[in-house]
Length: 289
Image (tube, rainbow, N blue to C red; front, side, top):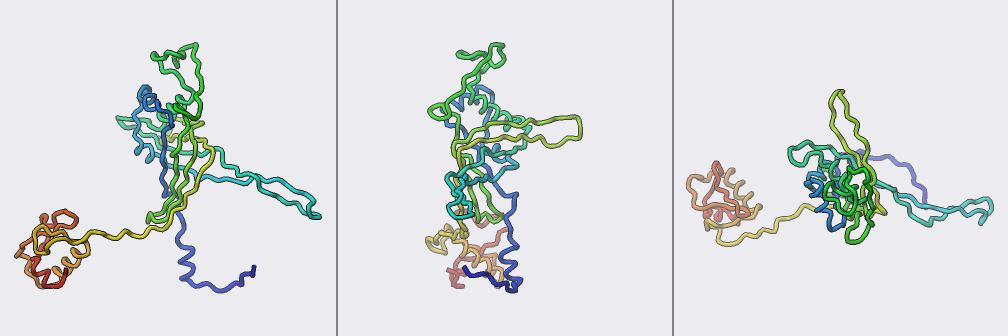
């Protein structure tokens, strides 16, 4: 490979390649539910009302995962050389998610209650008085039996995702985590000192992740077609035609007092209070259609 010769760089090159860095504050997290068919009932029995959208939004901090290659050494195949050959890809053993803890009248402390209940579901803890196969959680003879991770009542979940995007929403990286479940909830100190936001940090285990690389998304073009007679009161104009009509109306000496029809872009009436209208016959004479 030929070496690179240093050359002067133009300001335009620097702006193009260096002045648009990715920002850490633009991301979205999707929290899944375990595959167990009785998990929803378990939530209800524990008094947890799940609002999936709110839980996703409460995630204030996440980590883009990493991995490494496990290697083994080969010595003396070549004199004085130590080689390393890869034989396995090793993933991080967990991902940490930090949530703001809400204090709504309905569904308060949602992150704490949801993940506590999920962990309770994993070890199949009994629920108070309804315990029929194990002792109740507050019973002195309390015990539990951990569920199997897969199957009809498994506790792992597919669907945990962390999506990194930018302000224009055109570039994305999506990390999908396979067979995830919570393994720890960090302690959350409270005190009489100056108040601060209560946060809950949960560590999720998974076996591997899949990286889905998004592509640049072009701005969608309108597919609305003009139908019917432009002079008809129920005519539906495309956004482009509407823009042309408005431009001509405000840049010419058209009498806006004589209105014979309504423009309805996308089916929404344009003749609302304060909106200007023009005669469709005049618009046709201006070659706007």
